Image (cartoon, rainbow, N blue to C red; front, top):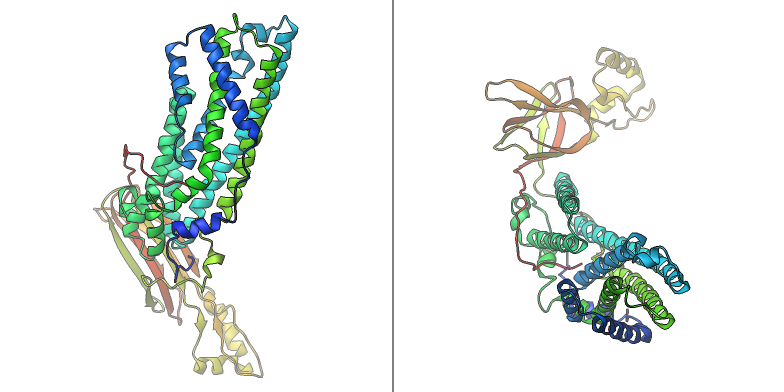
Length: 485
């Protein structure tokens, strides 16, 4: 767990000073010129044949201002690229292009195949950016979480949540959902991720129960995830700096999609001339190249931004000791047990323990390190083969030195039913240290047992932490406020 001593959440002013180092080179002048030309072509197609109700809705959407959020625009570009790629599939072309009879149709078919390659490449860059950015945000947050089973629980909660989200998308697609429907769901899920991060900061919602048990989570991190998306907060600076070029690209992608949609429905009566073909080709090439350039730029900005607080930049002084660990001495020949009463199935039981390694008393050291006593050591090891503590003995026949003991202790977990019947959950094994957790299948009494009964002479100092965390249930919330990455 990284130290956060002396840190405060980033401010908009601080982020502005950072962004001053990363001015975005303006978009090519071709973007505005080609966007205007595409709008003229769309108008020409609507004059050729009045738009249907669905086409009219699509045109109205294209005329609206893009969303304000950076990541919502990213998703909108990804959606439009998917729609364009759908239209560029040969099976979706007008029959005249699938089986060209004229040189013009053959030329347009060739252009469309090249454009599909361009959009495939741009879409791959978009997906890669989103995946890496999401992982970077989560991993940075986890850097400041306790590095024990509780951090593992948060990761498991995230993985389970992502599996559920993917299953939801798969079910929608299988039931015949459109690309638009799919991306509406994907954006809703994205907002749920942001909301969960904000809930982690305020210890509410899906993480309310979990955070209750996360003693040691730095308050500066909770403040950061709670405040980052305030109306006049740090992310507003990001939108003002880098939003305008992205908004322009969003509108351009939408225009290309609208044009292809209208053209396919009117191809019987409207044939593109060579100039119009070149216009479509140039618009697609300029859009994909400029979008890839923007994604590469913003990826570098995000990767180095103080929005992602790095451990090195924070100047770690070393991990702080977690005060909730307990220490207990397990005497030789004895066991130590911790019982946890679990009220519901699918709860988590987690543990983290280690033995305080050290050296035995000087009196005993002087006795057995002296050369004449070496045979007795060998005899002891024959008589007590399970007493592994004395296997690693630093022996010197001439110099009296301490003996360093590398200790271990037996550990197991069992379930005890109401009738007293025992079921082994974790088999007995000897450890110097261990960390783990499991999800309970039944409510009832679970017992964690540390066993030092095999040791004849040596007591063990056990440092441990145990928690039982109730099931975490995701909550559905309909509003769309949340964090942006």
